[in-house]
Each structure stands twice: as structure tokens, then as C-alpha cells.
Length: 173
Image: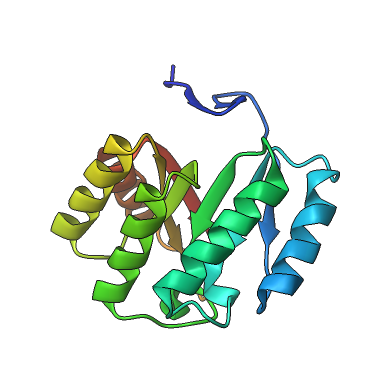
């Protein structure tokens, strides 16, 4: 039996399939246009892929965009994701910028969940998870390998490490 995790009106639990739809755009106008379309699409949760946003390196612009997105999505849960280039994302940030971006999003009161990539400094991950939880934000630990399917033992190791670091695990290949 697994523990259920509730985000707004959505519960992540064994046996329940949820639909998460990505929100992608380079400009705020493009993002907001897409966001309005997703509200009626029947998604359970919206994932803003901030790595596609042209101004991702400008914290004030990201936070302003986040406020607009939150308003457009109404009651839908919002997952904040910066996917690094090494895991299939659009933009590369330094480790310092990656953690600062996620920390500001978590503290903003505008997101419900943040996605943290597994293969980062463990002390920084733990500190970010603590900050997110203190702000009432849930954490998804993720790992993406689009080049190969890891060996079963490696997948199990990664999932166990994710479980140790955050309550929701996501593994893609």
C-alpha cells in the first residue's frame, strides 16, 4: 500500500490515473494563450515547462509569468518544472540558478508542486525539498534517460533514491 498525496482537489494514489498536460511557450502571450486552452481540456494537473520560456534566466520575469499563469489556470493544480538540457529540456542553467529558480517558485505561493531532477547534489536537493514542504508545496522527484533503458537494478536504485528524497516519483525513458 502506498501513501496518497493530495494537491488541491487531486489525489495521487495507487490505481488512479491522472492526466498531466504540459504548458509550453517561449513568450508570456504564447503561454497564456495555451493556458486558457488547457483549462477546458480536462487535464488533472498542468505542468509549466519553464525551460521553454525565453526569459527563464530573469527571475522577476519568471515570477511575473507564474502569477499570470496561476490566474489563468484557476483551481487546476500547477506543477513547476525546469527540465535541464541533460535530461531533455530546452535550456541549461547552472546548478545554482536551477536551485534558486525552484526555491523561488516554491516560496511564491503560486505553485502546488515542483519537479526536482534526481541527479543533482543531494544536500541541495534535501534543502530544496525542505523549503518546498515548509511552503506547503509537494515535490516530484524525476529522472529522464532518453538514450537507453537502464538496467533493472539501476531503475530500482533510482526509484528508491527518489522515494527517499520526495513523496512522488516519476521515471521516463
